[in-house]
Image 1 (tube, rainbow, N blue to C red):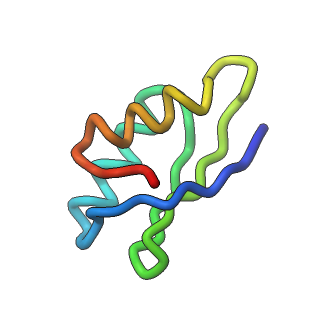
Image 2: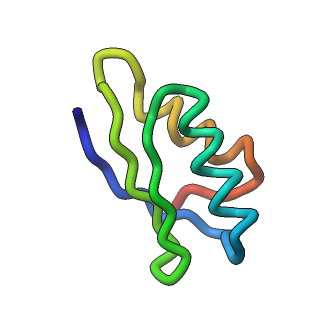
Image 3: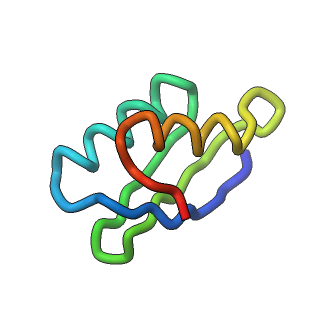
Length: 66
C-alpha cells in the first residue's frame, strides 16, 4: 500500500469529508480528510490505482487539488 497526502482546497464541512472519502472508496482507495489542514491522506494499491485517478476523483467532487 502506498500512502500520500494531497493538499485540497474548497473543503469546509462534514459533507465535504463524506463526498471525498466516499468517492475515493468507490475507486478502491482509502481517504482520510483533515479539514483543519486542508489535506487528504490517501492509502491505495499503486499497482491498481494511479495518483492521477485519485486527483481526478477529488476534482470531480468539486474540489481543487493543489
